Amino acid sequence: MIDAYGRDINYLRISVTDLCNLKCTYCMPEKGIEKKERCDILSLETMEKIAETAVKLGITKIRLTGGEPLVRRGILDLVQNIALLKNKGLKELGLTTNGLLLKKYADDLKKAGLTRVNISIDSMDPAKYKEITRCGNVQDVLEGVRAAKEAKLFPLKINVVLIGGFNDNEIEDFVAMTMDDDIEVRFIELMPIGEAGAWGREHFLSNEEILKRVPTLIPMPFKGHGSVARLYKLPNSKGNVGLISSLSSHFCNYCNRIRITPDGKLKPCLHSNIEIDIRNYGENGLEKFLIDGIMAKPTRHCIQNSDFEPVIRNMHEIGG
Image (cartoon, rainbow, N blue to C red; front, side):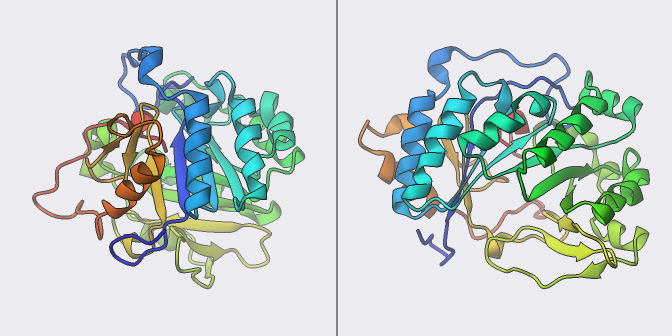
């Protein structure tokens, strides 16, 4: 599927729930969220139909997100049913999680057909992790990482939102995780979306800071289309370090993705308030729904523009 600017859109992210078992400060209001009515959230059956239609149109990669996808009842059935699309052109089925429930689910996810997993960890310091998540225990997440390794959910990626004055003193520790393990630690620049916008510019750090702190990192060839991370390696390391520089060095020219929110909105761009509502399409209108969303993708985000209007929704409502 080619968008209006010639980009091949082959990656679909489906947020299966806006609920989460954490309340990260840059993602969710401190008071938590009001649970939506069941009728306002897409059914698993509708998600499966969206996935099937997307693969028919040329989508080759699907990622399930949240909120926290592993709190959605029936998630294993959803994974298993979408994984069947590997016989119809789907090449990769991934999942992004905070890792708290991976110890319980990793083996079953692998058996259901999940290809790979991304785990979000913004601090390995127990006190700081609890502070930013408002309730989490980082030890549970690290046990989830081990469970993902044992289940061979590879390639395994660790997502770290880089926050100035909070976790930038852990940069070297996160990079060191790639030395002996075949994992990719990805540093993501703090983006002005929802609650994250309240953090202020003083907490923003360009990913260039990683290269300043760890000058021994060796750049790897850029993969081009669809790649959001610039990859680096420590000498003789088994893993990689990825820098996702959404603000300081946008990758819009290579963007190959669209997102479906839990309440049935297609977001052509994460940093835009443009949304295509599935409810404006009939039962047989899924192809048009997806195609209209793809054709609505802007050429690039406008975060750096003076007239930029911040995205209203929080990340838990959109899907990470």
